[in-house]
Length: 460
Ligand SMILES: C[S@@+](CC[C@H](N)C(=O)[O-])C[C@H]1O[C@@H](n2cnc3c(N)ncnc32)[C@H](O)[C@@H]1O
Ligand code: SF4
Image 1 (spheres, rainbow, N blue to C red):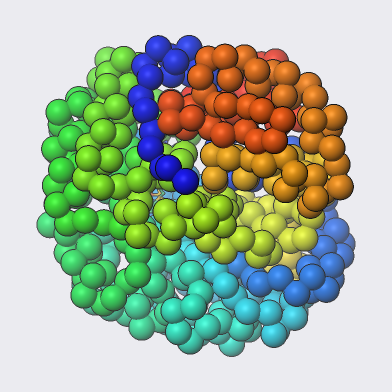
Image 2: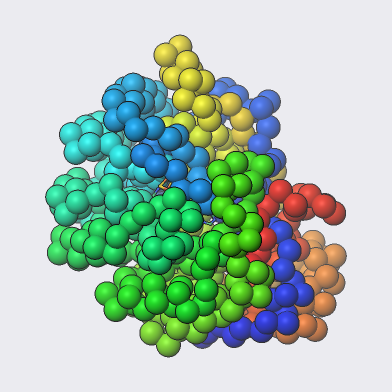
C-alpha cells in the first residue's frame, strides 16, 4: 500500500477536537474498581489455554528532575536509594505473576518504561533482568522485541552496552527539543552531546531499532527552531521518530501550569510546526506510520504496515500482534485474555498490596464481545488505514453493513470531506485523512458520548 500523507490545514482545523489515542479500547476511563484479583486469575487461566505469546511491561517510575510538560506516571526523587524498596516489591510481583502463567509461553515482547527506567543502577538492571529470566521464558537471541525507554541524561555508553548484553534490541530516546530556550522553559536541560553519545552507542552495540521522541507545542518553540532540532537528528538517521503533540491536561499534571501561558505556541503555530515536520521527514525518506509515528521504509513497522500485520498496544505500534500483556510495577496496565487491569498507582498502596502477598490490581474491565469487535476494527484502521468488511465478517461472524449501519452512515460525511473512501467492501483512509485517524476511530467507539471526550488531549 501507498504510505503517503497530505497536509490539509482547513480540514485539520475543522476536525481538531479531543479524543483518545487508542492504545487501549475501551480506554482506562472505563476501568472499574469492581474488577478484582479473582477476575485476573480467571483471565490468566483462559490466557494459558490460548497458547498466545506473552508481552511483559515493567514500570520504573522514578525521575531525577521533572519536565514540566510531562504527562507520564512518575515519581520525583533525588534519592537513589528509593529504588531498593521498589525493586524488592517488583521482584515479589514477578514471582506472584509468574505463578499464574504457563512457564513455557515465550516472551515475544518486553518493555521497560517510565518514569525513567535507566534511573536504576547497572547492578539493579542486571538483577531485574535476571529475575525476569528466572521466572519467564525469554529468548536468548533477537527473536523477541525487547525495548527500553532511555533518558539520555541518565545513560552512558556503558549503560547501553549493558542493556544490549541483557537482551534489549530496541530503544526509544527522550529528546523533545534541542533548543536551550525551550529546554529551560520545560525544565529539561539535555545537551546534544548526551543524546548523540547514546545514539552512537546504540548503533555500535547493534540495537535493531532506535526511536527518538520529540514533542511539538512546547513553550517558545517556533517552526524554525523545531526544524533545527529535527535536521540535526535526521543527520544521524534514527530508525523511527515519534513526534508527539504536547498533551495539555493541567488538572491531572499540575507541573504543566509552570510553563508560561504567553510562551505557548498558538494553534496556528503548532499546525505550522507539524506541517513542516511532516514534510521534512517525508523528504528525508521516512514514511508516516500513523498517530505521531514515522519510520524508515525498511523499518519493521513500515514493512508490517504495508503487509497489514501491524498492531497497536500500550507501547504504541508493534509487529507482535496477539500477545497477552503482563504489566508489572506501580500504575502498570495488563491485557490478559478479554480483560484489562491496572496496578495501584501510589507507591505506598503498591507496596502495601505486595507486602500483603497479593497482586496490586485495583481496577479493570472485562471486554464484551462488542468491545473486542470494536477494538479489532479500531486497531485495523489505526494500523493499516484500511478496513476490509469481509475480513471482519469472517473473523467475527457478523454482517458489517448491518452491525455498523449507524457508523457507516456517519462516515459518509467523512467521505464527503475527503478523509476516506467508502464502498460496500472497504474503507480506505486517504492521504489527507491519515493525520485525522483518531477522528475516524472515534466513530466506532461506543463509549464516547457528547462531551465525554473532553478528558482526552486534542487530536492535533
Ligand atoms: C516516559 S517518557 C520517556 C523516557 C524518559 N522519561 C525521558 O523522558 O526521556 C515518554 C515520552 O512521553 C512523551 N511525553 C511526556 N509527556 C508528554 C505530553 N504532555 N505530551 C506529549 N508527549 C509527552 C515524551 O516525548 C517522552 O519522551
Ligand atoms: S518526560 Fe521522562 S524524564 Fe521527564 S518527567 Fe516525564 S518521565 Fe520523567
